[in-house]
Length: 236
Image (cartoon, rainbow, N blue to C red; front, side, top):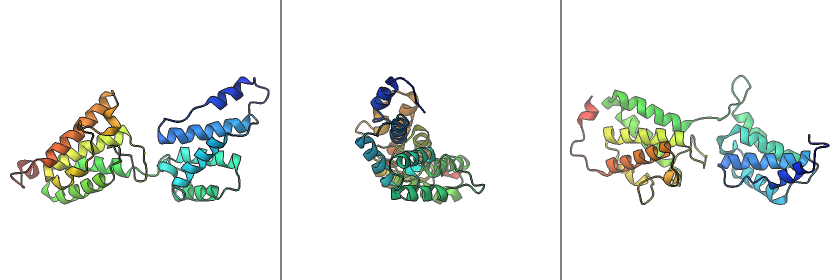
């Protein structure tokens, strides 16, 4: 690929630092660094190879972090360094499990957390009492899958939260709390001491701050005692 190019390409590839990015950004960067080294006729650094295999082992029989693109690129890099590694077979099987009916592959297998939150918002808009039990079940599901940093990922088994999913879940949680008195899960909505999710605590983005405030409101509403279990909100 880089045959005959100046030696500076080799130096640039060696300096590629993928640490400190999103989880899928780190894996993608590591895989690209390994593939670049191979294409330049170099042996990938041992620490990069260790990082790649460590990440793939973390979800050995599933698509890594629910990200088909990062998962596939990592398999290509692993094949370039160790074509007999059993992780290749496991990783390929994981891809086959998420195939679409037409044989194609999705970018992300599912959006269970994000879509559950959006469904909660739709149900809350109608505010029918018959929806309350379903809303509570959605709330329990989302609370059980909150990430340690206080945010939410788009689906299960993904450690990296994202602003879209966190925003949808916090908005849905506020309405579940208002309509259904979702107090039993208030302690499970993790925030920092200042009341905002740790995933947004260091951010200056207005979207992150809005989501953080929504989660704080939800925590306050959940903790507040309800004088009327059949509030006017629930009788619309």
